[in-house]
Amino acid sequence: MRLKGKDYIPKEELRKIQLERLKETVRRAYHLVPFYRKKFDEAGVKPEDIKSLEDLQKLPFTTKQDLRDNYPFGLFAVPMEQVVRIHSSSGTTGKPTVVGYTEHDLRVWTEVMVRTLLMADVNPKDIVHNAYGYGLFTGGLGFHYGAEAIGAAVVPASGGFTKRQLMLMKDFGATILCSTPSFALHLYEVAKEEGYDVKKDFKLRAGFFGAEPASEGLKKTVAESWGIQYVEVYGLSEIIGPGVAASCEHGSLHVFEDHFIPEVIDPETGEVLPDGEEGELVLTTITKQALPMIRYRTKDITVLHREPCRCGRTIVQMESIKGRADDMLIVNGVNVFPSQVEHVITKVEGVTPNYVIVVDKKGVLDKLEVWVEVDERLLTDGVGTLERLKKKLEEELLNNLFINAKVKLVEPKTLERSMGKAKRIIDKRELNL
Ligand code: DLL
Image (tube, rainbow, N blue to C red; front, side, top):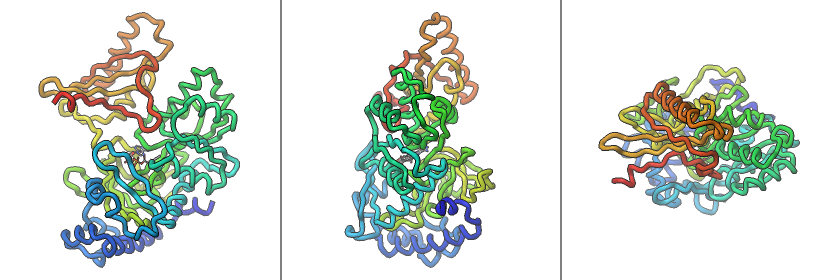
């Protein structure tokens, strides 16, 4: 429980710790990583110029491309004999991004994962069913080490084999589920199909969900169907893995800012935005040894808030990620994220939260089609019902998001399920060009 106290540290004290750690990180990066030295020199900044937390803004950004250009280990700040773990993120194009950890880094990671799990008071009596993928992906091992450090019993289920996972969850009496939100929904759907009485057969009391965006509607569906506390977890391998931020009992995501300093910038100009304004999240690690990340552009769109949280934690709050800048669709001039489409869908009665967005081009205009699975119970209703439902969804999308999308209702269980991160967009524009 001592670690939980770190979330309540007085703000002034926190700022002091951050500044000290930031200075040290910048010094190490400059002297140990030629890439950072070159970039800082080009920008005309020296480690000594960092005298306050605001001076962070003087430093240049780091991007995924920088990691790729220095593939695999070019940004490491320690010799390989000090590296004890390597992870990598798959990356849809080109080389993966590779990240390394020293023993100290693994301790930091475990600490933030313990603080994450304490958001639902995970304790030694808990049985933690970990359905995040084990392997190069950071989800599996990140949760594993955190839960073990608490003394809970971890079931390293990893992804896939849905029916077997349900059997183990029931037979072992899992109290905690860790998975992507889309997989949690999939587990629930299969549990119903298999005839489980979800609230009686399972002992789940909380779940830790992340690695992909989830709308408020999907979170509510997952929490209510399983009857559990929904803890959101945010993170990325470049920074550490899961455990950069986690949500408290009031649903506010808190960034563990004694380890990671967040900023929000205008993605176009790079200008730092004031708290309360939406933009791209930029993160700086201030305790990591093997791979210090300075002003890393995450491409994730969010808002920071510093007003006190009802839970009493003093560390900064972050809104749930709306989406990645890469995934933002521009439909005839209107910007829209898949999570916003999801939010609209989850508010309409008669459909499930399973959907994909198909983007195509018609002349110069982008054309959007949303395929949504209807609720099984509606299949026996007449064509008229389905037609009205389709119209209703189209109207809601237009009224809420100002986009003209065509809705296609599809039969239950026809859209592909993912065992990890869900794929929500099918972009035909690239194929047509
Ligand atoms: O997804 C780490 C993780 C594992 C986080 C398990 C939470 C739970 P990457 O594979 O490197 O790492 O992907 C990082 O996933 O930049 C976001 O775009 C997205 N992401 C992660 N958490 C959330 C979240 C892991 N809670 C990328 N909400 C990030 C929305 C998320 N997007």
